[in-house]
Length: 114
Length: 112
Image (cartoon, rainbow over all chains, first blue to last red; front, side, top):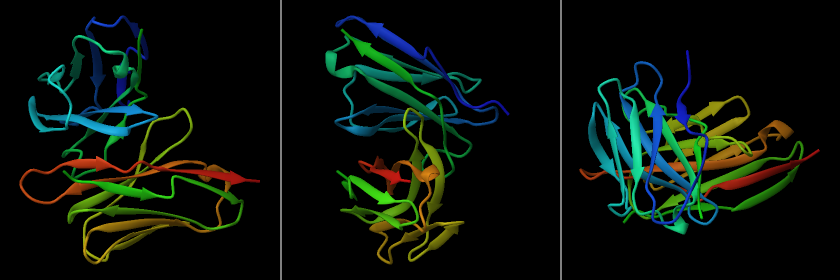
């Protein structure tokens, strides 16, 4: 079956702009989690959506938001971009939730803020 | 908040040597997961441990969960060049407000 698909793969934005990233989970998976990965901070949990509801949230400012649609596809939005938001953004899908069951990661979106 | 320490940060081994990475949490965990990320790749789920004192094996990989559910280890026997990558633990806190925290990872280099 198809894996987790993230689009776009690469993105360059200017400071102050906003960006929307997309994640299509594996068919049948109801949970989508988002992560930020940087060399300095490692892998940090942003939030998890399950059946269109945000179930868990990490310690990120309100500029980071997300949503999940009825087909389980998820989007993540970052407003008022800062240089420090440059990172690899990963999403992971799972059947029962990232915290309980095996999660499958997408290839990620590499965001560069200039 | 929950803190997860993973050591060592880097490990270089000769092919055929063993390798171990450790994760320690400041709080009791509900469960812990292990992932492997190859250079330029994305994390791949390896295993989940749930029970106190649990030991699971996958071929040359042995995973352990401490009796107090505060620490875990991943041991690779007789490393191969295909084992190269960064190994992460992902700790899930217990209690009503569960959090998932990734360790900083151990970057393994295997020299042929």
